[in-house]
Length: 165
Image 1: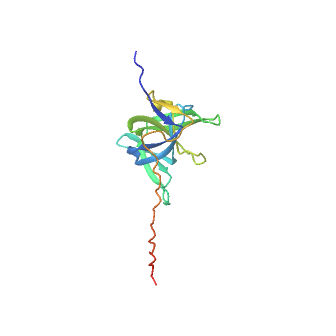
Image 2: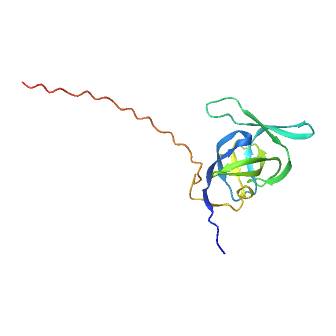
Image 3: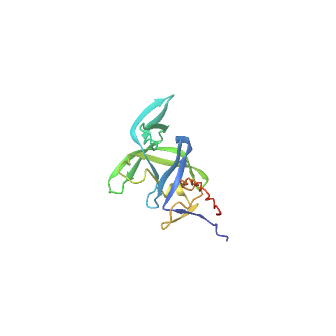
């Protein structure tokens, strides 16, 4: 039997959610969580052509003030036991996640994570059996964090003229 080689992820990675127009969100890879969770506020359910949609606000981009409104088809509610031990009924949607260059359809619950460090958690079900998580590393996937390059400014140095006497 040949063992499959699995890609390695760190405990935090950058994730794209293209259907929600979210790029490079810093997510915690949480093997203790079952499902993926996204920070969402001001949840409201609307029905259109017999289908229930959930509209929600996500935080503004850096340097912007206005929340961004997103929507997804409401598939139902999941009972989730949060890290503080309380059971919460959360709405969930299905969307595409791109992690490590791989596109995958996942279920994602929506909840207010205002006081949390990460606006997204990626749980075991979203990870599947494709990756190994190295908790001592960060940003191991191919979707690397862009490092701002410092602009190097070269100063012109005036050459001294040597005058012979």
